[in-house]
Image (cartoon, rainbow, N blue to C red; front, top):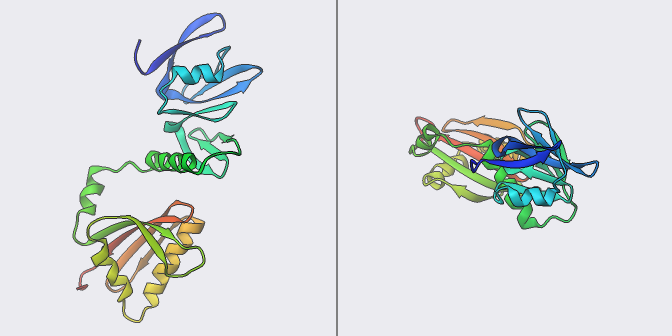
Length: 215
């Protein structure tokens, strides 16, 4: 039996389940309902906890006593609402540790952003800086750098030294708006071009390009 499959009993017969295609499991009429991406749901008498024991522990998580999800198919977390790749929104238990919540959110980011080699190569350019920023909600022009590439510190100074400061203020406003409200914002000055997009609540990423003429 493949490591990516498990065998379960349903309707008095045994069937093979493709783990990679299993989105989530919910309790229905005292049975476990397995939901997939490319086949009809399956009902089994196996409990959710028994199924969890059969599945890879690093790929599946019990978010409620009656809800088991695949982390590979988790696309968004909004407080206690977990949205799966098929659009289904599942409710998590109220008591969720901050550490667990953070790990789940990081997994969502991993699912959304697969870094391709060409993007990685671009980030090595001396003219392009990249950073993940934790943005203050009320204090303007304040952000903590969570991660950045090697040229971020040198290129980020261009924003702070921008001419009359109007474009610099626009960049900071865009950063704060995106981090807390979402979306994508682009700001272009005389010496720089910046693109901001939201990673999580209060966290955004910035791709900053140094334009010709900047020292």
